[in-house]
Image 1 (cartoon, rainbow, N blue to C red):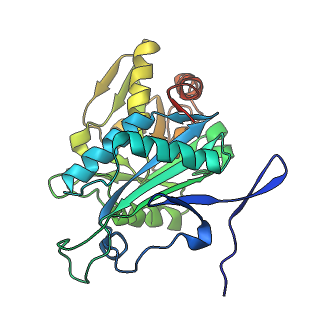
Image 2 (cartoon, rainbow, N blue to C red):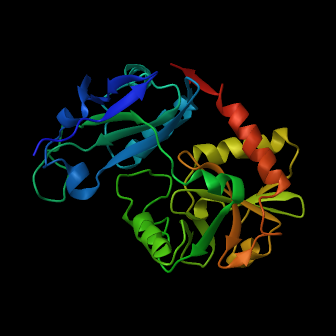
Length: 304
C-alpha cells in the first residue's frame, strides 16, 4: 500500500514536505535508509531537536556544538562541517516554507552488518526534518502540568553520559509509558541516589524563597539548550540561581516549578506526586520566565 504524502498548507496552498537526506531534498515517502543502518538496529547515532521561531532558528550554533560533542563522545565522524549543517538546516526550513516549527536533525552510524560492533559501518546518514510539533496540549501552558515520579530510574551517568543525545531514548520512553498509564502527561525521573534527574523530555526548575534551583548535570540531566537560556534569563531578571541536588521533597515544598525543553519550551508544573506546587497555579515568576523566553527566542539564533 502506498504511503500517504505529508502535506502542509501554507497561505491556503498545498505544500509537500521536503526532507533533507544526505544532500538531497526528497518527499517523505522517498526518505529511505538501509534496514542495516545501526541507527535503526541499535540506536547508534545522535540527534538534535531545534526550534524555529518567526524565521529564526533558535540557538542553532549551540545545538550544532552539542551535536558535535555527542558525536565525538560516541566516536562518530560527522560527514558535514558546522557551516554545512547550518545551511542544510536553514535550507530545509526554507524549502518547507516554515516560519515557526521544529527541526529534527539526525546522524546515524550508517549501514553495517548485524553484529554490534560499528566496524565497517558507513557512510553515516544525515536526515533533517522540518515540521511542526506540540509536545503538550495548549491548556497545560496556561493552567500548568501535573507530573508524577516513576519507578524507572535515569541511567547512571557513568554508564552513559546524559550529555550524549543519542538515538537510544528507551530509558525515557519507559518512564513516559509509566506516567501515561496512570493518567499523567509527564514523568519525573530520579537517579540511582533518589535525586531528581530530569523529566522524560524536559529539564526541571523550582523557585523556592526567591531562588531558582535546577539539578546539576551530574545528577543525570541533559545539558538542555532551553535550560541554558533560562539560566541566562535568571541573570537578566535578577533572580538568584543555584545548581544543586534536589529531592522529591524539594519539589513538593517549592513555591513554583516549571519544565524546559526544546519541544516543551517553558511550561508550568503545578502538581508533583499528587501534591500541589505552591497554590496549585502557575506562579508569577514562572510566567515572567515564559514571557521573557518567548521574546528572547525570536532573535537569538540564525535567520533562515
